[in-house]
Length: 183
Image 1 (tube, rainbow, N blue to C red):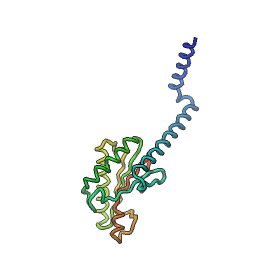
Image 2: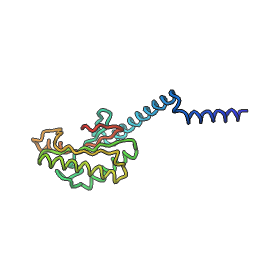
Image 3: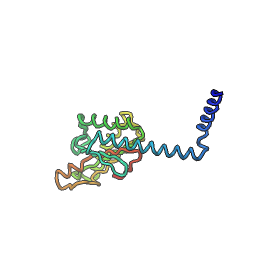
């Protein structure tokens, strides 16, 4: 008798699982649990990034970002890669993407105003594209990465001083399920 009862309960459970989309209450519960999982994963991602990047990490509008001086990855005002820092940086970002596969990445590159606006825009776009391509080469899906060069259009310091120009030459990498492309 107990065995039949168990089989009956198992059959009911399997039937409900297959037809759960037809039951509004269960569909709502699934969406709530999916949202809870996403929030937990987002919080886990942010905590992990905080451990990896420490004080360099900033979180704005649910998107975690790290800003790296472009001179660490590229020769100043150039698309020539600094091999020593390049591999480590790309490997670190790729490892984060592999650990959190739902994460999207936005690579934003910026320059100072030392050259023409057109040249700076082209350089920043090339730098951003090179980082995206390196991540794709590491196995990250291209659709999960957006790359954008901003040139000199969004300075964070004065271009009148060498220190300010150096601060403006930067790469910002943003991580999150749905980061906005508005750096």
